[in-house]
Each structure stands twice: as structure tokens, then as C-alpha cells.
Length: 359
Ligand SMILES: C[S@@+](CC[C@H](N)C(=O)[O-])C[C@H]1O[C@@H](n2cnc3c(N)ncnc32)[C@H](O)[C@@H]1O
Image (cartoon, rainbow, N blue to C red; front, side, top):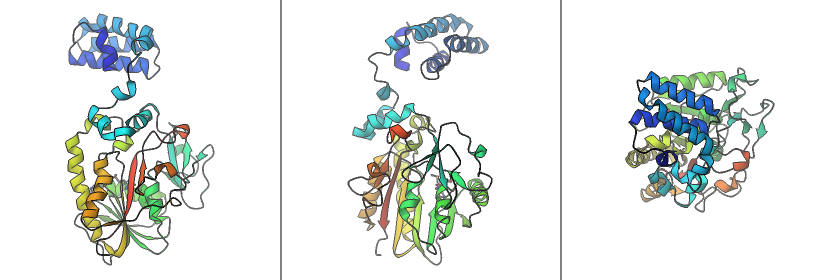
């Protein structure tokens, strides 16, 4: 949008005026706002902010964008321009496919409790999630109050499915709130301990589990310090991350994160992976997951874990039969918002299965 605006301005306007113009361009180009409404909104916004001298400029520029927007935009590589350069480079040859997800609003995906019926109007996805159009309000769907399902993007539902936990096993769910993965684990009949550091988020997790009528042991603690007794058969670590994979729901994430944030998060991820190692019985399994598109938080964390003695246990083709496009050569699970374009995309996720060092 900045590139579209540039040639229409003879000199750089003050920052608030530029912001208002960008809002106008976004309304005209992306939100299908009728031109008169977009122009009137921005002009009146400028007047109310004491920027009346710029009202004429806004009027002229935005009318021109409304009239000639398509011609003005010709030759601009919108996908490239809508992604910060450092992320575009970091995404490498996946960048264009990932950026395609920028222009699709995320649908609403549900995970059903075993045996529950899907509310009408949904599309059953190959992985078992049920998809509803963007904008659907989950609380309006029949079965919500009875705890028959919860909101969880199709890609986000895969790590817990891939852990393939069995009834009676003891599983620790680290970094658990708001509890989508906890609910999946608890639905298997496993003994689940959910660990969440933030008390307010832990309270939300408890509320969610109570609506779902699922039984879980809750621990409010820092996963880096807490240890279970007896040790666990499996740990699911949904580690705090840059969350770049969630940009369809949180578009600002692409613009507020910096490369140094990713590096700091990676250090924390290594610490939590090794903490998980101290929670597992010998030969116990760790499912490491992040909703990040960044190599530093995915494959590079696994490579670092291998250097510290962890073993990778690749996901097989049959384990990922429902989402074959998500299986990497190394046997990791990796998705991005450009996948499943005909079905409405999915979040970006990374997951790998690791065996405990010395196990
Ligand atoms: C990505 S969200 C987890 C989403 C969740 N697993 C789900 O499927 O609904 C990350 C969560 O981890 C929590 N968290 C971050 N660092 C933590 C730590 N060191 N120990 C425990 N919880 C932590 C955050 O408060 C946040 O609620």
C-alpha cells in the first residue's frame, strides 16, 4: 500500500496523515468499502484530529486510488510487498506460497469430542477437523454449551493427534492454555497433567475444560522448573514462539516481531525441550510443536536437540496420511497458511517427535 501511495504524493505528509491515507487505501483496495464512504471517513478523521489542511489532499489522493487503483497497482508485487523483508528472506522458497495465505480470512475449525456430532453446515476435513466459514460464531453452534467441541485450527490439531496417546498413559501438556491440545489429550482417556505459567490463562484453561467436561490435573508453574512424580510416558511441548504461523488471525504478528525476538525465543525453546527431557521416563516421547514458520524455532531447534543427545523419530507417511503435504523429508510436520488453498488454508505449524536422551 505504501508503494501504491508513494507516486501520488509530491512530498511526504506528516506521519498521522500518511497513516490515515493508508487506512483509506486499505478500505478501498482490500475491504470493499464504497469509495464515497472511505473518502468521507478519512477526511472527517483528519478534520477531527486537527489536520484539516490535509483534508483536500486526502480527498484527491483517495478519489484517485478509487478510480485508478487497479492501474496504479499494476506491476507491483503485492505478496512480496505485504511481507517484511527479513521474513520474506527467512521463508526462502516457501515465501510466495506462505504469503498467498495473507489474502484469505481464517475459517473457523472445530475439533470434536470423540463420538460427538458436528454442528450442521461444516466441512469435514481429512484430518477430522470440521470447518465453518470465516466469521462463524462458535457460541452460536448447537452443542457448544454441552461441550461437544472446541475451536482449534486444523494444523494446530495435528501435534496432539501425532502423539497418538493411549488410554491410561501419563501425559504432560506443557504451556497448556487455552487448552486445545489439553482437551485432545484428555479425550483419549489418558491421565493428563496440564502445566501453565500464567494464572489468568490457567483459569481460562480450567473454564474451557469444565465446559468440555474433561478431567485434567492442572498445575500453575513454570515448565522450566516443575517436574512430575512419577515421570511421564509422553510430553507435549507447545512452546512459546514468534507465532508467525498465525498471521491470518493476527496480521500484526508479522510487523511487530524482529529477528532478535526469534533468537531469544529459540533459547527458551531449547531450555523447555531439555526440561521436558527431565519429565520423561526412559524412552519417553516428546512432541515438540510451535505455531511458527521460522526455521530457527522448528528444524533448527530439533537439530540443536539432536546435538544434545535427543533422537528424532520421524513421522511416517501413514501417520500423516490426512495431510501428506505437511510431511517434510526429515519426517517433521510442517504447515503454512498457503496450504489447502481450495479448502481455505491452515495455520503454520511445526512439530517433531523426539526420544529422550539416554532413553
Ligand atoms: C502457544 S500458547 C499454548 C497453546 C496451547 N498449547 C493450546 O493448544 O491451546 C503458549 C502458552 O504457554 C504459556 N507459557 C509460556 N511459557 C511458559 C512456561 N515456561 N511454563 C509454562 N507455561 C508457559 C503461555 O502463558 C501460553 O499460555
